[in-house]
Image (cartoon, rainbow over all chains, first blue to last red; front, side, top):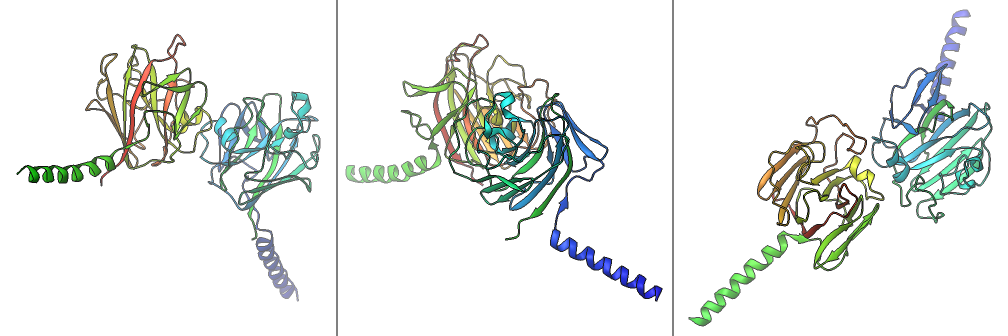
Length: 220
Length: 217
């Protein structure tokens, strides 16, 4: 009986594993230990502390070296150190980054900043927007030290961002965007269907922690 | 006899003309900036059938798309010894501003006051001049840039200045305005740089011809 129970347990757990691998399909891109598979460019850097990626200095970015991604969902779980801190998730970067500005002008930054007004920026710069380009459909960011789950769907030319289950951005290439106001805001123009992506470290005053970065292909 | 000669001439002309016009495609029409687009500070003007840079640093790029396995011919002259310009090649994405072309493409330098890594015909800061071949101030220079897959050759006034294949070693980057190192694409956008002199005045560089022909293989 014990033998049979053990066998059953093994069989069940094998079954569960297979099932979860199939249905869930998330690939973890941060191993929780070190920055294997990632590379940093620009000022500042990232470190792993207590299983979390921690930003320091900036502005720079830590990009995933696995190549261009598209038609997928990227999940990022993050928290701010203070009530508010600034960071972001770069997507649709057309070329492997060597410095910090090409990703700004030729890709998108999915913004992380719940209080853009404090840096004299309008709501087009709120958590979950495509920085300076889209208006938030919801303001769903949680202040530090609460955890936030951001899911970014890259569906061909369409980009959908949800923060804590609420849709903040739904943008398709070619739709109108506001005029560019500052020279640090991204240049306008189409972004590629597939691109490199990365996490932004914004400045000495902004510390953001990332617990999970995962990706799964879009079911079409 | 006369008739036959005329016939012969006509035949010769027919044979010669298409071959000539097929080979080199003029991408500057000598009149206006059709087919070109400016990004970054400053601009270009057309003066007496020539392109002339104003201000900078920016670039005027060819909107015709990516170029590869081709020869690019640029005919230019400078007015002062410290006039500064350049020809951008192998730019991986259509430019929107002036720095991506620097860091992800190459600038074939035009500035003969520079050292051997920054003189006319080198890949700016990356290659060592194989020859100092620039003509004196005021004289026309012909620069031919061959893009052959990952191989870049620059010939200035008939002398080879650069012969570089992707992946070959380059000197360390010493200044933040120098290009980031790393592989450039086989195919890329091209452009002309407008760059002021040291004293911020306009570089008086004149471009009389910019033409492209496919590489014969």
